[in-house]
Image (cartoon, rainbow over all chains, first blue to last red; front, side):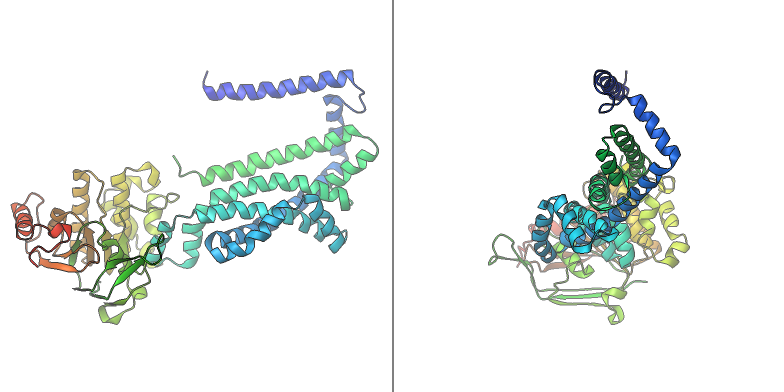
Length: 250
Length: 255
């Protein structure tokens, strides 16, 4: 059996084992606190049909995307400046270390206090949590840029726009994708906390609500729905993008 | 189209990174005039500042202490320059064709020049390949095609055929000569291989070891087209070396 097939069969088996373990445990415990997969599935289905899950999922995804793009754009800009210019690096380095080490929760609460319980506050809080990570990754990439290729652009008097997009950015691309992948998975977790603390819709808000009623079934149904969406995003967006950016590697 | 070039360098000094007070004199007083369409080879021992010289001419090194004057007093930014480096320096994420087209102007691109030159270089089957799929020799060919497609008025080459086997290197030398014969341009070709220099060039400039200056300026009168195994090449090489045994090491024994 080829090694790849063998490894993916292990993966499949481990998933099945997880399901079986879950079902066993739920059989021996209170169905209210430890519901069976089937009942979670039913709840999920009902919530989807009802439309409510779709709405809250949509709100959460909207926040995820907006803060993701803000964090990426700001992070890439600062990261590139820091990687290319030592002055910028020295200037922003302290800030960056500071922000890297402020707990997400603190940034969220401060943001709500300063900007009120608003959408802007929520998105600022999430972006601020992610920007330092993006900066670190992109700075690393910008530092490892092969200057010899930029010299080619210089000698042949290639326009600056072309130089940036054809000679520079492709070198940074693997780092951008790494930052984006890590970013989206961190951001959606923080978005839930932000929603729980100060929004009146979204998956985080709903989970808070279900928590008040000890509705474990619904909590798990929402969780599963969200995880499926995020895995779908990875498979349908990031994976193909990554493959595209690596097409020239053999 | 090609340009003449007049080089007057007063000196070129490098600050060493480890010891700020210690300086490395790469180039001494260096005066050199190269006329339009001339194939000029520069030869000298390693570390004598040959690459530094090309970097000063091409503007990659901006700390020029001296003057470099082109034809009709044109500025460097108005001179179409090509530079073939020791490594091919192709963009790994572009195909062969894209790698050539990326340095071309819009008009050059529309005139199908890239394909034309790539065909001449025998690369028509590989237009869609990525550099990582090509052998070292083929990558150099793409780099040469890129350089020549840009219709340079000044073409700088820095030991472009090192680390190739003889057969491939000779093939590339012949390609360079045939391109240059069809579309003459001013060439400055840096090498440490005297036989290569004699085979290719109209004129050879021998540089001393650092701080470099011109040791000898030798016109090569062998009629073109030349043959690699031409006995004149070998005998000229021998006569140069016998007259000045240390010249390739950058020392003028007759001085």
